[in-house]
Length: 211
Image 1 (cartoon, rainbow, N blue to C red):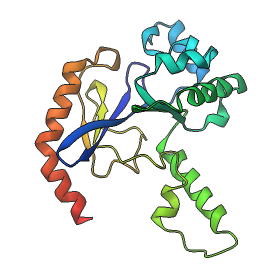
Image 2: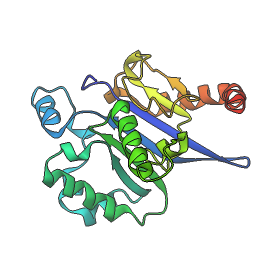
Image 3: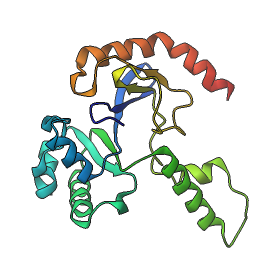
Image 4: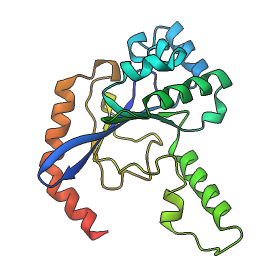
């Protein structure tokens, strides 16, 4: 994934006639060293990195991210260095009791890794019992377990491919591909994405019911 390109997922849960944004997930497959190299080359604007203070001082994260119910980071976190893993865990702990939106960061993540992780977890659970494995067994062992499937996936730069991002969860998802690059995405792009979702809502719901 180019350092100027990104993914964002906007997810909504419909409660009766009210619409409320519950989860926002963003994807970054770069490791810490790759991010640093990209920044040195001027390829990644610093403003799009999470503030360093949030990782150094977890108590500040609760205030900085007070609009969130919680912050979760998912992916192959064991490939990150120990200080980074500890900092990430500190931020997640500091925001665990927040009461609003969820921010889900997919770091060192590919959908292939997630599916393999789900299979391994399901096999481990079944090793001493019933050998049959269901879709539910896989899903509860995947990184994304417990989160609703996305309604809208935003892929910037005009690309129409998912680049190994949330392949399992986007079967009935609207793929919105604005031509702007990730650093230039703005509120008007997001609003237009929601409008496109509203226009396709009945069709997407019809497809879901057929599954």
